[in-house]
Length: 378
Image 1 (cartoon, rainbow, N blue to C red):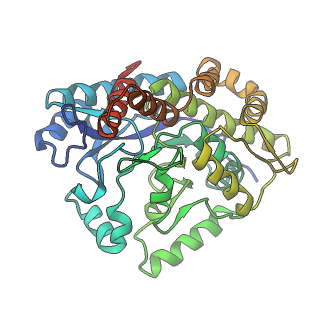
Image 2 (cartoon, rainbow, N blue to C red; image 1 turned 180 degrees about the horizontal axis):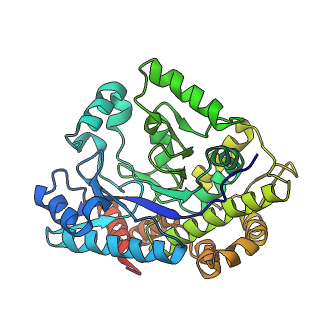
């Protein structure tokens, strides 16, 4: 079947938590003027999120990874500067180290009001942030085909982006606690498998016609065909605290998708594995990040993550060259050597405690690290 050649354009959405610079806690009721100022400078590229203590930004449609970096830097800088004028700061982390969801207020918007009314406690706990990456794939059928194959790599992307080890003042023991919160909602987790876009649409229509959802924007899978844009939207990743890490993840994702498309042109494809197996790797990425390895399903054994990463980089080397993002994707080696945001948060806490700081002050030190890292490179 003929299909349109993908453009592999890029759009990045990031959600930030707003903290009070003095208390380091989430600001429960930020000034209304803050979002107004951001909108004046960013236009429709900034919006409120579910909680009043959150803000979301979205880049323009970018033709390459370098354009995505430039726009993401600009938007982060604006949020940082505007927040600072109000004594606040954004942190690009998927959970806050110690603030409690019971103390937050959700944004008064029809969409969020209906979400809370329907989901109740499962929605009220959504004190979490993520990074969503859209990759332009104009052909509907190709989007479904690549979504089916991309599922295998979702745990690998999560493992390199973890930024949510703390929840309400406790070390959860997980590097990405965010997904344990988000997975309480329906229509989350790994995507279903479909033979065609028409089959996907038939399933969506059943839920729409039954009155369960208004449209497919209420399907919150780890990767999904976008309802609003001709893109494949990957949603599994925690928001990366450092912008270099975020861009590395963007580069890795778009290179994997181009590699899968290239295989298709050669009458090949990535093997489709059952959700049962992929969920096992997804859990391992949530629990350990890259510390304890993932399962290589072809070998049927646990393999160190650095070995798996080298395999992915080797398979996508041609694609990184074609997309001119070899430098950006190579930054994943720095993530491996330095650690994800989750690793840095835990280390910051341990160092503070070792120096004699109280548990409360050590958690504030973690917030200070997050504020600094969010602004680095911006």
